[in-house]
Length: 418
Image 1: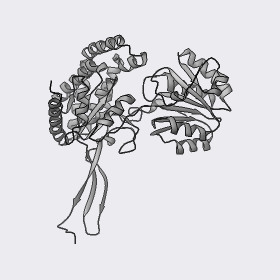
Image 2: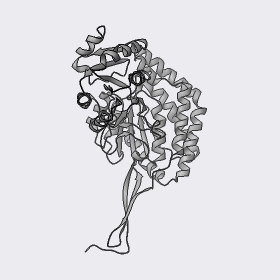
Image 3: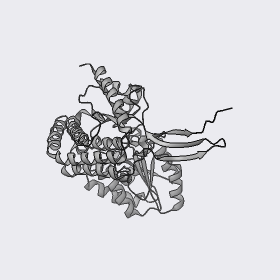
Image 4: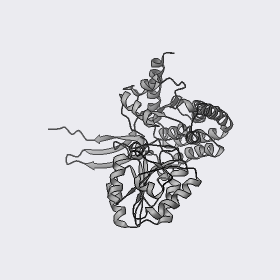
């Protein structure tokens, strides 16, 4: 198999498809998305059968329960994919919208207008719903997409991609607007991320090892969906019942996803009361707790946390806990060990809230709410193509606008520069 030739051909086809997509009106793109949603529902049995193969292979390979949870496709999750496609269809199309307009003293009219990025490569792991979400967002913004999922979800991804293409092409989608790399050799990733001139942007979604591998090899721009070392900080002014509820939700609802918390910071003034109650709740949910020296004094049965634990993304029912003396210490810990993803403060004191929001250097900062809301769907974007922990050109959940760039259109009446 000549992997270089295969990926290069995919790039050429994607470039041609992107040009065709850019000429489609919004109503046609919406019709394509609706047909995709219908086909996902009609193909549910085939998708579930393919997913069952992946799940069984994952069990045999020793995937953790949390990772298997990311992989499995239930009837509800398949229905959710279809709803996501329809939600994206209902959103306003950003392509062609005017960002700003002004007229120069010489009479030149300058318009700054949103346009597609072009060809986007997505490299991702585990969650097969990413195949539908990213395809929907790219189609709506007239970007061709080349998908490279993880080997653990290969059968599921191929079944989903086949349904998307079948539905979309019935309504006029260019044949190669959505392409899935259907083999698992790692060389395919290297070829994809080095296709200068054919691929305009790479978005990796997955663990730290994947992100580093992509960024080290890439020759085209990369927006990193980096690991989610998220925190909740419980201030001395916190409503402790709220803090219990938010912490349990942020850790336990789906521990294998990037917006679940991996560490908890608790003000030392409330720790003696709060931590025993929390530990009881977390024990019932099967959470393993690792704590700093002061936390061990309050919860002597837990395991001692090490320096290596603070920046670790567990993606499992494990939580690191540290007591702190102030909001400033909490902020310093988050900025030192966090991944700039999502962090929350539980506090009634407005000064503590303000200090936390101002000083925590993360893409999404919460006041009295769970970090689990960092999600394109929850933000009203219909779906997301990733959660950027970079600062350029997008940050946080990436929806439709983040999948566009812009051009300047300058109109004159024969002006020349003196």
